[in-house]
Image (cartoon, rainbow, N blue to C red; front, side, top):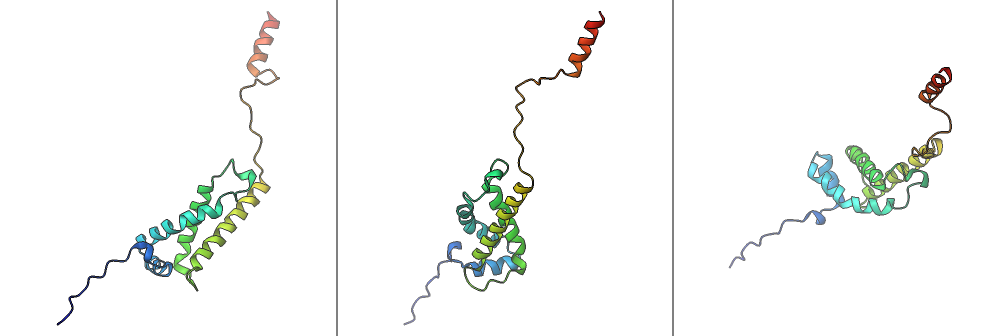
Amino acid sequence: MVAPAQKVPPRSPEAETSFELLRRARDGDGDAENQLCVRYLPRLRRWARGQLPPGARSLLDTGDIVQDVLIKALRIIPVFEPRHEGGFQACLRVVLKNKLRDVARRVKRHPPGEAVDTGLPGEELSPLERAIGRENEER
């Protein structure tokens, strides 16, 4: 008697290794790129949390940094050759580290200025006030 063929359940996206996702993404599969982003986005957020230089915190958000890192990582997928399962994760960490260094350098070169309080009037007379004052003196 022949045993009935068992159906093999489809693999869930979580079960697919990073190697497989990278291979599919390299072949132009946009769904594989999305799955890589979904898989690594929470990790990137954890790694980046609290790492933004103090001077840049008012200018940038950690989410912006994470998005920039993911975009850059997606651009290098066609030439990226992972040597082990954690290769893409290591690549992301390096890209994140370099991005944070770039931000720190930029803040050091161009520190954010002090906020201008627009609620207080200036001590000097405005051109209009000077003109009115001259007219009053002439009268």
